[in-house]
Amino acid sequence: MSYQVTLKNSGKAFTCSADETVLEAAMRQGINLPYGCKNGACGSCKGQITAGQVQHGDHSEKALSAAEETQGLALFCCAKPQTNLEIDVREVTGAGDIPIKKIPCRVASLERAAPDVVIVKLQLPATERFQFLAGQYIEFLLKDGKRRAYSLASAPHEEGPLELHIRHMPGGTFTDFVFGSNESGTMMKEKDILRFEGPLGSFFLREDSEKPIIFLASGTGFAPIKAIIEHIRHQGIARPISLYWGGRRPHDLYHDAQCKLWAQELPNFQYIPVISDALAEDAWAGRTGFVHQAVIHDFPNMSGHQVYACGAPIVVESARNEFVAQCQLPADQFFADAFTSAADLAKKTATPS
Image: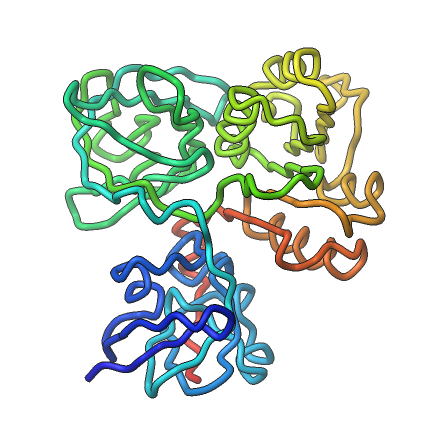
């Protein structure tokens, strides 16, 4: 059985079968809705059901609470229709003409950037033309059928391999393989062949705006923001930019020198590193505390800004909630990509509609 889904704002409509999610159906028919993790953990695809009913699959309580669901909010990445629907969710413009592909690649290089971060570069086949928008991500297709998503740290105009920043999550099947800490002792090495699907995600610069930009990154959430900043530099975009990058200790800001170079080269660009758990031996003299609170301190009124945030779900969600509630940031001007790990997904709870 199929149902019709209508977008309240534009009037666009598409069909969705009872056994697929609203997001899956929209993507299949070229309707671009916002999304991030696609598994109910980040909340990027949240919207309002203005007519009709859905059934939710497993999802994180933080991404969609029971109270929000009672109010008619839904996560479209895990919501399946039970009736015809009318939904209120912003559409994403700019990514509709880029094909999503499954592509083989070869590991070109591995560079340890921090104790728990490796920069992986992937070489594509010589005949392959891979289009993407700065800030999007790819999903590795693993042999057991599972997928692992990583943001692209390289910008579309850059020649050469694709760049990823991968943090070690102990116990994670894929990152244990990357870092050589799995039970079998096997380790990712140069010339290994992998497969991925992409580009995916709606985390990219909205170039139809002239608003000042606040970038908020935690840990390897810096990767897609790096790509967007390199794209901004290449395009000569002159919007004021503030980059806040948070880590536990200074070595977590593994591209600190690059950020300082941007601050020297780009007009209207400022870089604010923030460390939460520095040790005495780090001799850290910069900003301390939670990175999103540093932004609030510096920008008590964000009503005229756009925010692009990427990192751990708790950082992104705290920023989203507090920027909107405390700093007058319009909710539709907060763009996010939240990293989700196996631990995050294990915390998901099924909440029937």
